[in-house]
Image (cartoon, rainbow, N blue to C red; front, side, top):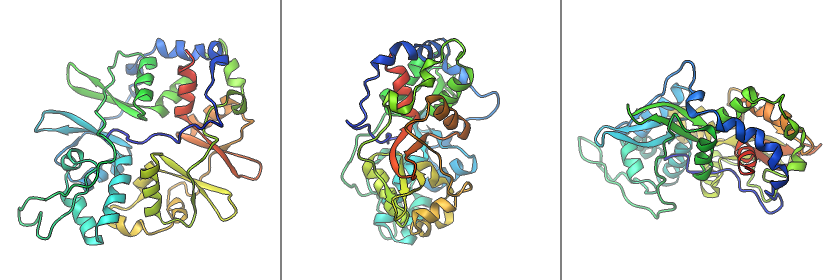
Length: 349
């Protein structure tokens, strides 16, 4: 359940040969070495924990109402944390349910199937047989072919350096991970790529040596500039969900009929679907889904000639995970994510 997807893979057209910048990126590695996961603990706030016995619908509602992208799952039967429930999980849930269920069954599944059942039978298709789940009868779940092995829940210790914490996330292709005090069995906060980048941008001692930030994206050659997964603005949302799952990417650029970029639909945008009308909402076009977001067709882009300091400031200021790289005509050339930046800074050590 822990963030099963990854960024769009870097192609051979964008080599990750970052060795020429090793000395220049040392400032980042050194900074991350002397700070711990505990240092990113918010001054205020709470960690929302969901119980494994909650229905999938209730779990989705908990994420949306609390304005969060993920929550640790506590299983009272096993007396332990068993998963990290994310909005990305619901892209998979909704895509599967839409494919196999009628509107009535779709809604019923969200009300009856629990997070525990979904986690246990992940990559299985829950089929409610006639009369199943009603009047106290058990819900019967039918298996469908497995696509991927379940990903174990990985915890980060509060005293772990941010360098080691970053490596854990990158190694497991996670965008986030729970920071847990193992002595008290308490999740202190959720460490994310975005929070790491903001911490670097705000607190790193850039006055010491900031040469690396003066390089352009073209010079450092990071990001994906190869074969990109994109969708047309007329694509139904349920097809977008299917593409996200099958392509193992976390977001897709949306293009109009002239190949102009109009937006980016990410897995986290699933939060804007109304719980009581999810099935119907999945029939709208992805353009309509973008327009229904609070920020509408907000577009965050950069050019290959932009400096890293400008791109990083945009990512941190807007609290976004990626920017699309475009040309003067707003045609898509590539995608740069925080994941790409962290790998560049850390893997050059």
